[in-house]
Image (cartoon, rainbow, N blue to C red; front, top):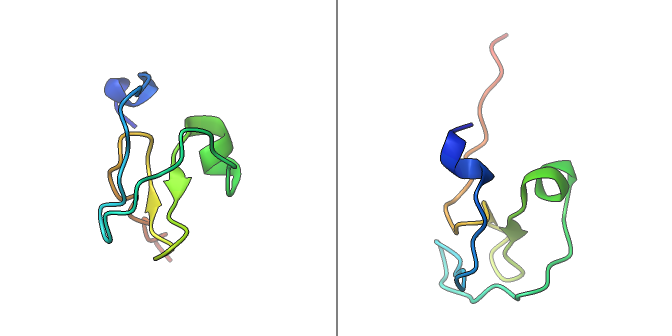
Amino acid sequence: MKIKDFGINLKTVYCPKCGTEMPKTRKPNGLHEILWGGWTCPKCNCKMDKFGNERIKKNKKE
């Protein structure tokens, strides 16, 4: 997590995969979105941060 991740985004956010506009009011889908903001696209199920960048799941080392 970087320092810029703590900022506030007041701009309109679009899904990076399908281009769907995210609503201004959001219903968090999971703990990460509750704590750090962001959306899950209703069309393609893409998870993104509050700036519209796709969140990539990190693999745990086994």
